[in-house]
Amino acid sequence: MRKYAIFLIPLILMSCYPTVTITMKHGVFHLSGISSEYDDYNMAAPPTFSFGSNVIFSTNRGSAGDNFDVWTGNISFECGYSSNDSISVNSDAGGPYLHKACNSDANEFGPIVFPANRKQDVTTDVYLFASDREANGKLNIYFYDGLELKLFGGNDLNADDAYPVYDYETNILYFCSNRAGNNVYNIYYYENTNASKLDFKTWLSEPIDEGNIKKLDIVNSSGNDKFPYIHGNYMVFSSDREGGYGGYDIYYSIKTATGWGTPDNINNVIKTHEPDKFDRTYFEKMNTESDEYRPTLYESGDKFMSFTGNVSKNKILIFSSNREFLRNLPSVSKGGVDLFLSVMPEGF
Image (cartoon, rainbow, N blue to C red):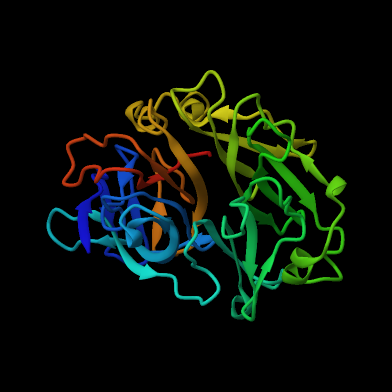
């Protein structure tokens, strides 16, 4: 396991109990313990982040750069007890995800876990991911319900469908697909109108009318829009649309009573959240000239961890990037695509 100080200054500790209070100076941290010399991305964690959270992600390290499998890992925050108390981010990779139905000789991307019903019954979790294991090599969304592997009933078998995320508040499944043609990805949604009658895993496998799957026009562009993730009233995703910083950038949309809002580049968060207090280097490092992929957004679910000052008390962002990570930190990019963590600004 690798450790590195997160450079959160100043730090106020009221012992480590009941709360660790942190003010953040810099904002993008390389998860060096999980990242490898190969490509590591598509990370997902539980809906609430705690001092120690198990995660799943896609990597091609097991095949030395060939096909992608789902692996497990862990991210934890650790408070120090020395006279120069600090917070460290620890991360390490466990190994291949050993559910018998999950990994194959093909590629597995975008793993994510949801409870099987609104009661958040973790004993019946549903595991979703995308794989190109079918004969035509197209990506399809699969789910494992604890008994068997099944195809999502809304897959277009002649297109690539991937990166599903389910919003239990609205009973809507979001995913990205190039089913409209020209090999351009858009974000789509499919509403579960039987949410009160069927549990999530039953609904996923039902055959559906493709006409009920619709583009989310407000967030889509003429470029590629991929990797949607929902957290409360926020959607985060990546896009290579015009006007970005280069390659794929992270964008966000906020949902109101009238629906999803027009997306904005996440680097622009600095303009609307605490601009007089915020360290400008923080989000200038979020989107770069390189690619930023598959953002996922979480709350801090640990009562001992409270972010204050220039960062949100609740929200943590994880993403992957092929950037050259050259900041003066004990760890640097290991090559390929690596995993990164950030804490969102106050008010986000």
